[in-house]
Length: 430
Image 1 (cartoon, one colour):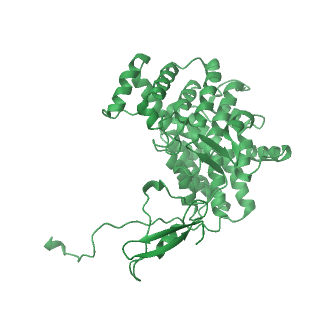
Image 2 (cartoon, rainbow, N blue to C red):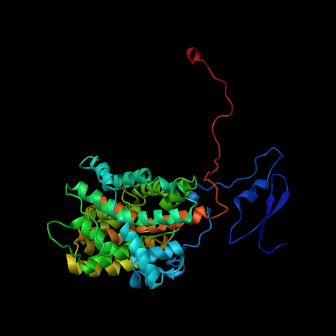
Image 3 (spheres, rainbow, N blue to C red):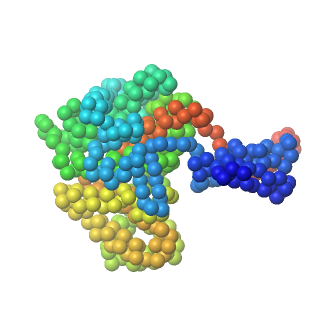
């Protein structure tokens, strides 16, 4: 009997089956051979929300939630945040290796070239209501880009795919900045070739009447690091949406719009906004014990936002980096008054057996919202900022899915629990 296998006994029939184990998993289709009769469909696994189901094989991101490890292509997130730039990290995610200097220069040149958008894109965005949510504008405009670039449908042409990736990583900052400017009634500001990726974004957001906008280097670096930390995170909700929609072989703009829509949800890209609301609700450090008590007792809708993670059962490594980054940012912007509440809340929660036993540690959202707020971003922009960083991961995951010979159009099964066959009853008899 092979060592790497699982022996299953079906107690309904008494039959035994041997299922191969590969990479710590059994194939779902191998369960189909387990039947009660010849006309039986075969056994399926039931796994709502994919709690223990691998939908793909990937070489991009590794997470060990119990140990608090996050690596992109094998590189620890701590090293990339400290030593790399976002565009260098984006190249790594896409190509699998860190770029040489000429490769990085060519990568940056092409992405910068494609930060500009068609003038009609501006007209499209002008059509949104003055108080439209920036994330809604961003998602809709990303979908609209598919009509500007019909060549993007050539998804199995490597040269075309590369061009779309340049366009996507380049244009997301411009579209995000335009969404922000539209929401506050300011004219759009165009990108410049001589600024960094993060610096250019800050310029398009915040430039007013000055002839030459020069971003603060500390804030520029902080934003670049935040983009790195959000670049990829394995098969999360939005990445799963990118792969699932992309599996229909639609163009990457439409697939990315679907991923962006998934990120729009408060359980995903809106989580750091929920942390800010919680800290404001607490109001002061002396009210933290009462708040903690209500959370533990399950009173009302009280929840400890920014703690715990579907994957991490340890301190989120990104949260450690952001916590340190916050000190640098607050030296420039001034201390966010909510920080003292956050620090005290973290201290109390990490010493409380209730939260420790449940492995509820701070995640990436706990401190990122404080930094964004200190940098003068309105909370409506938080998921848009997330989407900018995540774009490089989305396109890397999308391309990996396309080139995986085992992948087909995503089509989960269901367990039907409805009525058996019934006969139609005419309206007059009902």
